[in-house]
Image 1 (cartoon, helix red, strand yellow):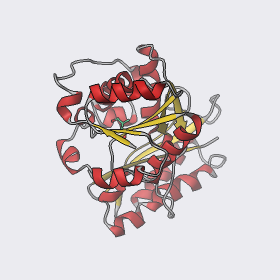
Image 2: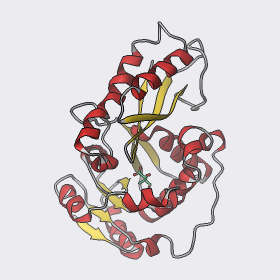
Image 3: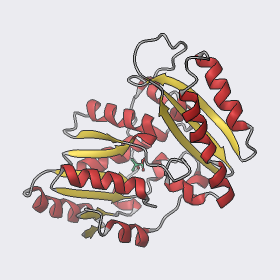
Image 4: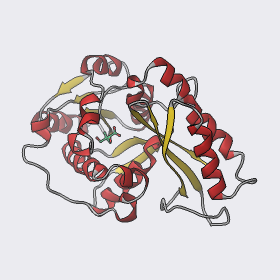
Length: 279
Ligand code: PAF
């Protein structure tokens, strides 16, 4: 496994690798866990070469405290990646990615105005800035993203369409801890007691899936919110039930198409997101 820190070096190495076949790419912000490794494994199964990037992207943090607290541990990330099927790790510094401030503004329409977009203004613009730069550097054939960040996935698909980028976006399933909590780098920041109580988020979503016949959309949203808020460690920031294709909120089960419940919950100082497909 090769580690690169500069764009020039990354491009040169990947040019050699590209002759061997397709490149699968897993962009990350580090603090790697089993969820990331599952993306790397899938990328390795579907491509000749796997590249992973590790970069905590400042432009996608709307809260400076959150950026400061974000877990960073390059040494253990590299150790985890060693036997994962990854060939190249690109771990640039901030000046390498942003030699100049990125002034690009993307228009994602309603995708940027609901759920994460509404609660974290500018977040998706920052994600699009960094992912478009990383795609330009790595030029992958396929890029792998977890569906835990379901709205991010939709934004990235839209960005590749807007910019005509020749990369296939591959969604990958949520990997959960034993207690059901969706794996996330932010879980590292939870105290043991918080981590245990946070398992109620998934348990509630899983129970909600069985209640769609008994409750209206609004009643189900209220029930999820009340059930989670009864736990003193947890506070729901939003719960939305949206169309799985266009992410527009739905108000009746009779509306056509698949539906997904998406949630953000505060647990102490940590903000957790999760989702579940309802039908
Ligand atoms: O999902 C993440 O870890 C980040 O948002 C990403 C896609 C690596 C961009 O910084």
